[in-house]
Image 1 (cartoon, rainbow, N blue to C red):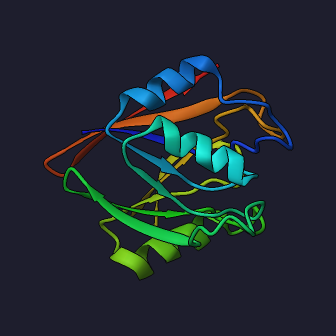
Image 2 (image 1 turned 90 degrees about the vertical axis):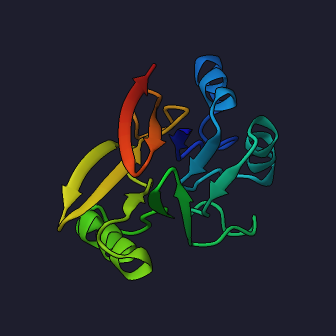
Length: 162
């Protein structure tokens, strides 16, 4: 199963659209995980229209678009816990890893956004992924996203940047 991991699109406040190359990758996968800060109902609708299956959470810029703060999805034998990661940069990894452990245990993978910085690390025994900003929205210095191949509980992650 192929999965796109995106976050922090911030359309229309900080960007006008997801870059075409990223749209093509997103449209080609089996499932998309968005870790929040769509920024508008229109941006959420546009992503929903591109993909067959979407797991999404709201970010601190999404107070009125009806998304949960945390979502859990099992894909290819891997449990993903998705949250935005809202709050101070200090303690970010502790905060996100704590949510993952609380929701699904330490074997789950956390996907979060908020910082606009790419992250693929293990913190306190929990793998954490942050795809950065799919539009390069400030404070990001470039557009980034992750794709993952997931099968039989194995996860292989690739960074894409523009």
